[in-house]
Length: 127
Image 1 (cartoon, one colour):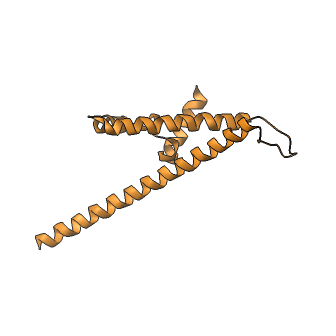
Image 2 (tube, one colour; image 1 turned 180 degrees about the horizontal axis):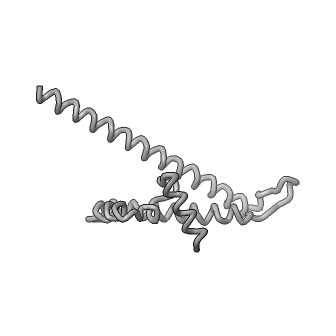
Image 3 (cartoon, helix red, strand yellow; image 1 turned 30 degrees about the vertical axis):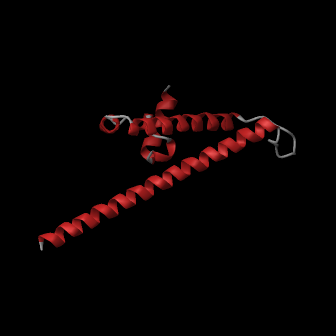
């Protein structure tokens, strides 16, 4: 009977890990799509292929520039997370950031909850 309980517990743990991994992969794919969109936008602008509604060449709007800026920050955050996971003690650093509720400073936007995104926006407005 103990054996069956431990197998059920192990199955539950495996299913939870699979679920978390799938969620992580979805967020990573979303981040990749956002990066591709911004890259295409910048590429079109650099080639002079960015057009307005009348078919005239145009520059990036302020919103588009902010989008590029935020996505560049997200790319650096992904690089930082990768470095953090490779380094010895990196897991401990990440746990400490989570304990002190500072993960929004190191996680890309796709990985943040709606509550964390709202807090980040509120801090930007206060600055």
